[in-house]
Image 1 (cartoon, rainbow, N blue to C red):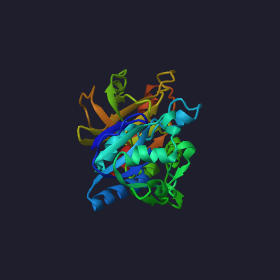
Image 2 (image 1 turned 60 degrees about the horizontal axis):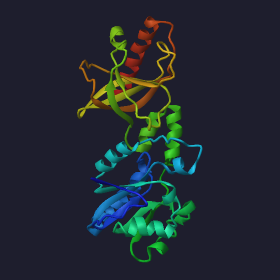
Image 3 (image 1 turned 60 degrees about the vertical axis):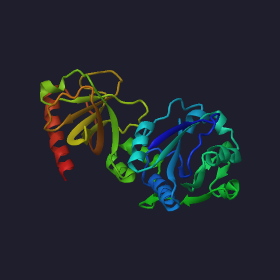
Image 4 (image 1 turned 90 degrees about the vertical axis):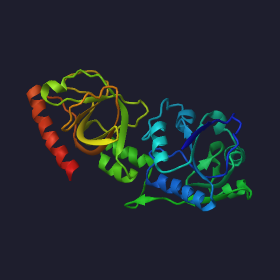
Length: 309
């Protein structure tokens, strides 16, 4: 997959024709996948490239003065990996700023659809574009003026409730990563580099990999989780603690520590993906090391059972 970065001021590159899925697509959940795979299917039907258009940063950072830094279910690098795995040919990443937000719907269409040789546009029923979101999928054929065709994907639901990024964030706030995995059609994950920690875990029989956390991630609730770890193409079962390590520290610095079962290799400096399967318990402060070790043993038994089910 080729990634092309664009902004309102850029001159469009010369490109072959494409069928385009457009939206922010945070999470690339089942609803988003319906839109994206519809565009891919249309591209195959027309014998042209498949493409996805997303925006960076989130419009709320530009349009809402209260939002200084957006948090994402899938930060851009992770979104790119997922789209590549879906077999998309081209990803357009459009820089969202006030100039882009001020474009009229017609100018948006000319700049980001016509000039990019888009032959078919697919988006969700609630996609809007142009100044104050005045453009809609209902109006898009009018702006297209027979230069491209369109498909509107209707609401995708699960248990009669719309699958949405907002719904997924609410579930992450509760620690319900099992339900999140169902809506994403894959486990919620955090990818980062294994960094040096205080190495206390190995002294109590539970060595952990400390994972650097990208500040862009929308994080689940603090606590202990049954997880799987992807390392160099291999998958390992384990358990993770996400939080502040209250037994040992009073600092308000969030940590992600992972104990991989039946694993004893040096992986400092490696990038790993932590896949969150089930929430086990809240993070608590223990009176001492012995009480912590007893609880860790119970956590391990529960995590093994959940992951082997």
